[in-house]
Length: 313
Image (tube, rainbow, N blue to C red; front, side, top):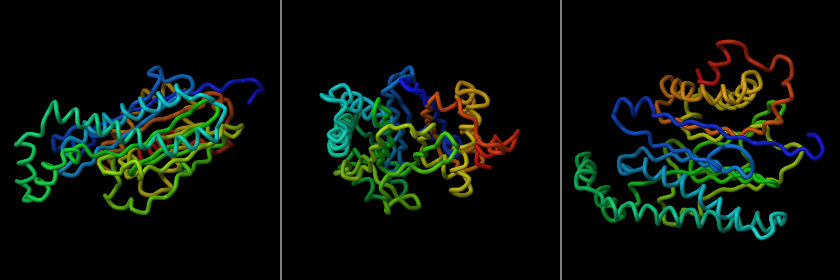
């Protein structure tokens, strides 16, 4: 990176309705949002949410939308209010302790407002009873917030730091300029297995957030990929899923970020149809100056193999 050169970041992304939801008539229960809406510059804020697909979470598409709107808004307020943007230790502490609490509180308030404006209907609750689960019907009737259950992943790229936040399942991949791919260095949550996940609808959801604060340096990521679990579950194994990070970087270098952005919906739809069947959402944060470096010889897959890896088949 040249001295005095400020790296330019961009974000692109897409969310598609899962193949199984198309068949059953369910809506896309994922959501994605970024600020600024232009998707260019710093700070950049990207949030992705996956509404739970269980029967009792029948308004989780709304819950996911409220999650990304709330998270991006709260984080923007946090960045705007920083008294000393160079005091990184204070920012790190505040982000870890206060951001999750404020996001969870505001999300619950917005859900309460939605329930007040659109109360749960007898038809919605009767569908639970029709599934012979009286307990769930009573539970959701007493706690309507359960109908809105959703996960949340967020990444902030500021002038001097990158912040990763995660509640529940989903994936954040970090790709170096050399095409090396790893998962974001977040604390492990051993409770995430099979279809089990932590959620914003938990009473103390803010306690379940995992975070990582990274000071920006010369070795900053070239790409950060943020996806709901429907994408990762479309691959045969973690090796194939991690490889997609290097493949996307190679394609951006070959064809440009705009071309990749234009193809995202097609790729994600194929991933769902041929893989998980779930809704699939992917956001890509790209450091544009990192595209100037070429990958080592032999790294770039060719032709159909290239597209095949990205769709996970």
